[in-house]
Length: 286
Image (tube, rainbow, N blue to C red; front, side):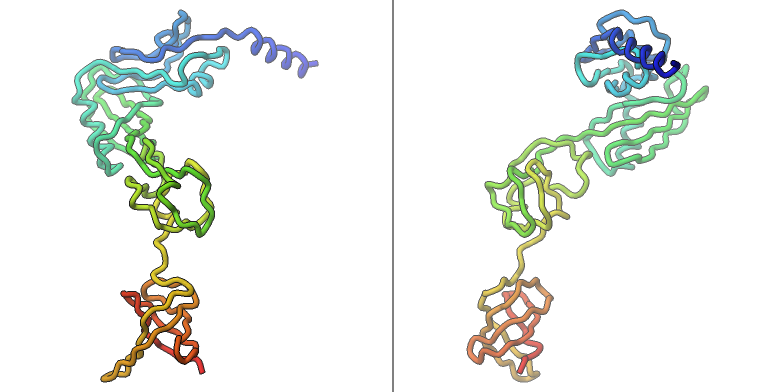
C-alpha cells in the first residue's frame, strides 16, 4: 500500500509540475542569485543558487536547476549566461591564478557552482586554484569575513583538425579526410593539430570515428622505408665500405633494424635504417 501511495505521489508531481521558462542572458549586480532572477515567471523560492562576485561570468545549467528544484520543469536555453557588474580587479586576480595553473592565456572562464557565503567586501586575502579536470578548476577565495569557492569551466575556441570520415587503423590520412572546426581546446584530451598540413600523410594508430578531433597520440609518421622499396645499402668494414642495393621486406623507421634482400645476390640481410634512406647491413643470412 505504501509503495502504491509513493508511486501516486511521484506520478502526480510529474504530471502537474510547473514549467518555468529560463532567460538566456542576465546582467546582475553582486549578491545572491535566486531562481526568480533567471526565470520569466515569478517564483517564490528562498533557495540560494549562487554567490555572485563582481566582474565574473556565470553559467546556470539545467542540470543544476533540476537537482536544486525537482518540483519544476524547465524550458528555454540549456544554460543561462550571467554577467555580474563590478570592477575587474577581482576577475583579473582570479584569471591570473587560473592561467598559472592551466598554463594558458586568452581564455574564458565561467562559474558553474559556488560554495560559501557572500562577503561584505570583495577583496580576497587568499586565492588558491585547484585543477579538477582539464577544463574544470576550483578557485578558493578567502575574504576577511568569509570564504567563497568557485567551480569554473574554462573555454578557449580555436580551429582544430577534425575527421570528415571514419578512419581505420593503418590508414594514411589525406587532405580530403579532414577539415578545420572551432572547438574548445580545454575539452580536448591530448595535443590537437591546428593546421591540416600537419596531419596529411600521417598514419592512424587506431580506428577513429568521423568528427574526432585528431591529436598527436592518434597518428604516427609514415615509415622511412616501406616493404618492396629498393634502397642503397652498405657494409662498413673499417677502411673499406662495400655498397649495393637491397629490397626492403618490411616497413621500418630510422634506427630500426629491418629484413631485406640483396637485389644482386638474392641473399637475405638485416640492416639498420639510416637517413637517406640507406640501409647499413649488420648481418647476412647464408
